[in-house]
Length: 130
Image 1: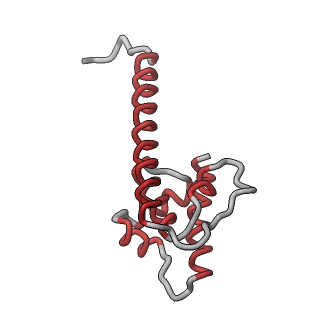
Image 2: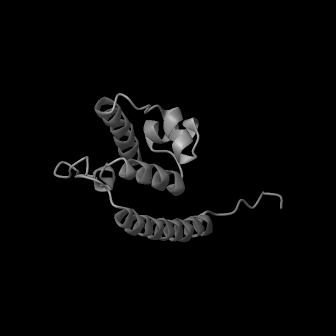
Image 3: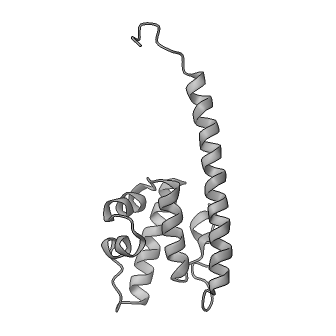
């Protein structure tokens, strides 16, 4: 799924570039606007590699540009419009940002729980020097 999300982010960037050729949609310009680096965006687009924070930052960026976050997230998005209708209102952004922050905390909690479970299940090498 990570790889698919990366490809969708790259597709959105290309779609916006085609619709708004007067604006710069390079990875470098998006990096400058989001506070990320061009390398981080390239890795995310290539194979979905990155942190939850990076994913949320890019999702919010594209949302502000009129893209539908559900189109990015849902595995089967055939029935989901890629772009949102009309203007995105400030209160909608605040509400969705709150949702995304909540989602980030839930994912971090999940990853913390599963990482510690994984560490506990890995046998310690008896020959290891401590």
